[in-house]
Amino acid sequence: MEKESLEDRQDPGKYAGVFPAVKKNGEAYFRASLTYRHKHISLGSFHTAPAAHAAYLEGCRILDTAGCGIASYLEDSPLSFEKWVCLINFRDNGLYFGNPIYVGKKIFYYYLSPSHVLKFDPDDLFYYSSHKIMCRGNHYFVADYGMQVSIVTRYGIKPYARAGKDFRFINGDPTDFRRENLEILNVYHGVTRQQQKNGQYLYTVRIHVRGNYLVGRYFSELEAAIAYNKAIDTLKRNGSTKNYTPNYIEGLSPSKYAEIYTSLHISPRIEDWRP
Image (cartoon, rainbow, N blue to C red; front, side, top):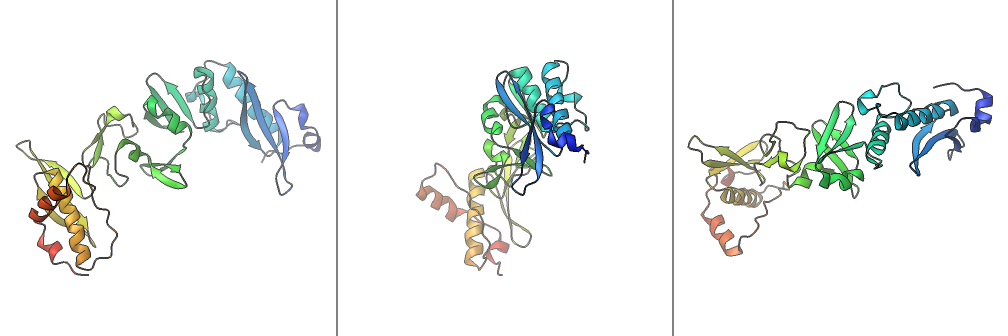
């Protein structure tokens, strides 16, 4: 922690952009802020007045220096990387967001770190400006109504979906979430689409029961989705207590669903399964 003299603590007003404050437990700290284009911007809280002043000076330098870009960030900067991105975006685009977003032409970038950048369509700007993205491995989440929600669900992709199997990034970039770059391969639970040598597709259905069980292979995606539902019903009837999520079949009448359901054959291993 940077040390400060008693004089510094008693007279923080000599530092521009620094405001003393006190925590609920009585501990003193210092807030840094500046005003740019009539907008008041908080730069963060600091243990000492000099540290807060350094952040203020850095913020002013960023806003006054056109050549200072996101790539100019250094780890020893008194500002956080997130705040650095926010200031540069405001300087260049006149838009201030609390999240580390930089707006480009027909695209915007969400910076998780200097080297970890996600790309999105402008239509998603309002959403991600108010929803902070978190990362766990290769999975990205936002907090929504008190829950962690996978961002892929925003694009019609199931939260359990696997990149490369259930959906794919057309240009091969797993950080590019523009809608034109996302192709959904498998819409339904337990269904995997496989292209045969003749160019036609075959749909393989598997369900997890202490390991992956093959339910069957079908020439129709609709049949495959219903076969998965039939496997769920069969397992529950045989004593399974696992909470499976059935496939929702849209635009199919109950009578047609029942007709397909009845005609479908599923693996004897599912029929004969017992707990």
